[in-house]
Length: 289
Image (cartoon, rainbow, N blue to C red; front, side, top):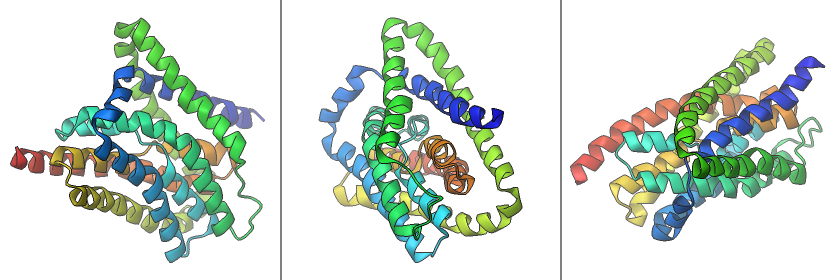
């Protein structure tokens, strides 16, 4: 019972705190930037929250993944854009304003798209497995509670006490990393008897999803004629996801550590992706300058 309370209450509270910290990085002007960069922003949102989940579905079918792993892969592909992408965009000399706008708008859009893609995957890929279930309306309610509301709270704190927001933002960022690591370790312990089997099933699919995210971002941005800075920023937004949200849904609402494995693996790999794109961005953006 204590463990259930810790997971069902403690985990969403932790994500609430993380999302409040994300809100502290945002201001109303960031949403105004939507109108300033429509092509890059629309492409980034569409690629991250519509096309990549479809890629996840395709990979799950083509690779014949077990139901739990397949659903988990689609969930992480549909997760909101991670705000860590803004840090990587800064390091890569990308378009920081665009990155912030992508994270902000993407978090709002994902409230609707993530539950829809997750349930579509459950219906199509779970073979009627009753153990995998995610109520749409309740999920949207949870997403609003742990994404939209805390972001508004964080923005309010930044508006009323900007100095406090700057200090708290760093602490919340460190807290978020600790929570992510704790989630990954906890999931590993939960499935330790099957970890090798699950890793063999999930590992190649997650790696394929990571490479597809990079290819989607770079190739699509080139076709649309985006600048090197915009292309790297959009690619980072597609490749860096808020995997903790996927793990919260898998563990607290679906009660399935197996479903949480793909988000956990993606959460580890995306940092390597981020640093790789930083190196790529610094070379290409400098060359284009």
